[in-house]
Length: 603
Ligand code: AGP
Image (cartoon, rainbow, N blue to C red):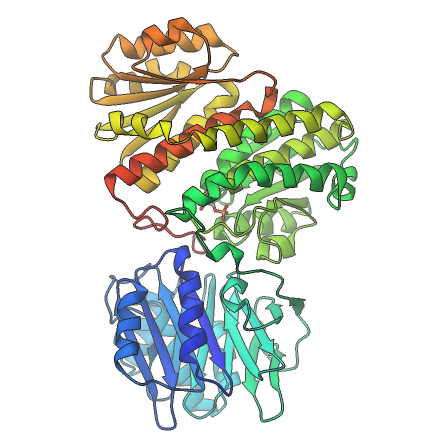
């Protein structure tokens, strides 16, 4: 979603702000802008479309300013136009915003009655106008920000600069915000993501909701101060060191980050196994030994929700513990039945997904424990959880989540084994090693799947099917394909096809059927039903099965032997490659597919 970067210091703000915005491009956006504070004005440059468009404007001038803010916008209120792009500003203040002001229409109507004018269709400009109004009344910027913040509803982060000083102000409610300082260079920063601050600000701070951050650079130091809304000093922030590295920003030999991230999986699987079975992660899992809870409430979105569906199988089948997996945006509004001896479990790559965070808050309010399977250490989810199970995937840049899914599921598997007291069983380590070896083989031979993609990419629609533990993989395979190739794809439980979706089948529809060794005959019967209706059949199934050869138009044979519960992860990598190669043939923007954001920080 929207990316924010702000700078104040002795250098030229244009450089770190534009570099920061470039690093946040992967999150998805549709316009970009920057505001540079000069002696006599707040200069705003903004443009719809790619950051390149803004960069071209900046390169054509000789811009220099000690204080600047930048923004990449993912439209929520108002069309994708240069006018609606951020920053929004007037002669006194400029503002960038990530989130939604839910009561913007009412506030805007009231402000217009009072004679204030608006230049854009955005909700964000309401905050600018509120700050301006309260500044006129109080003559104090901090007071004006506090009063404006109290008026707005919804989840948001704002960064504000003013004409009369070089200070950076920021405040948030349930939206990502990080402040940073570089003591050596005397620079102060703010951003929506610590990734933007790597190499710029080694000291970083995560403010809690309703804490106003004020960054400034003096001739002797860079300072970040924190205030409560009553403007007394605040200690409600977490200080940290930015340990992220820039390795992830390189695609290496790969054409896309998605492809690189698929190929990273074997090594990351091995690393995660070592971490949780033998190294630092072991004590975190040991705490789960013998744990029994009345119900696990999993909530997550998209791919992370699919990971929850796979993990549910582990907890139910292996641990005989009840697990309920729900889409976060549904769970939060359904008045869920939550009891004390239950655990809320949240799965999220970014740790910043608004709906997932809201579910966590709900569980905390109801007094139940909250555990998270999360990638980004220091994210809001991470900070608010009673226990975190990090997946150590490194930065995932491709909008289509690949390695995070694999490592989320694997982390859930280790948790299940820890509850059973099985972490020292050598079979576990061997099984995981077998998984990484098989996935490495798939990666080595991935180019074979190009010819599969070539045969099917022009078809009208795709139905992915699977039974049992492969059903969530059918859902995930379909999601991956639709998000990057922009084709209609659905995932179904194989046995459910005849209850409706089979009406769609004709020679224009491809059935990508996952046929595991379990329930083999029943699943093959489902494939036969599709074949009888002239559907194009792709079977991802166990090797050396001549009958699959005779039924399928395309047979992708796999060696399931010894993978047991982990075989869904193996199959899933095949589907990741198929989605990738189909998208490539269609010429889409694979790493930044249209309309999508990497981190969905609005509801
Ligand atoms: C996956 O390919 C998606 N882009 C999306 O479904 C994603 O998994 C979802 O938005 C959840 O994100 P999170 O893991 O960061 O919470």
